[in-house]
Image (cartoon, rainbow, N blue to C red; front, side, top):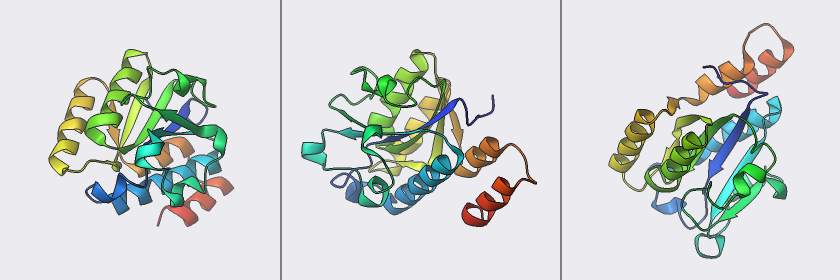
Length: 180
């Protein structure tokens, strides 16, 4: 199954100020998440951003938060973003395909992904846009999510599937700005 702009939502999980310093390769995870957000917004794909207990873990990283409207932020206390109900009520939350980025891969990302799959959603986890404190935990989480039906993809796989074809002005703009 290919990702489609009219069926997808980009879900950014817990990319928060107090958590990011502990994440392995955090700067790369954040950069990939910002890149995905900018591409999604350019292509009209909704973005939802969760914050795990923001009073303790702080707000979403400024480089990402400055791109997001308040309406797309979903606060949560459970590790999975699904049980509290706000995820599916957020703009784009009713879509069938969730493209997922965030931290930590083996905790909040994994539990959210497994719950999304159980709820009948198609899930695409962007490998370079998820992270954990330990790389081994990330690897195990990716393996487990794949075993349960999530597709593990790269950010370029996402953008090329969203674009569908070359030759348009939009393709040329996206190619110049995001694909180097």
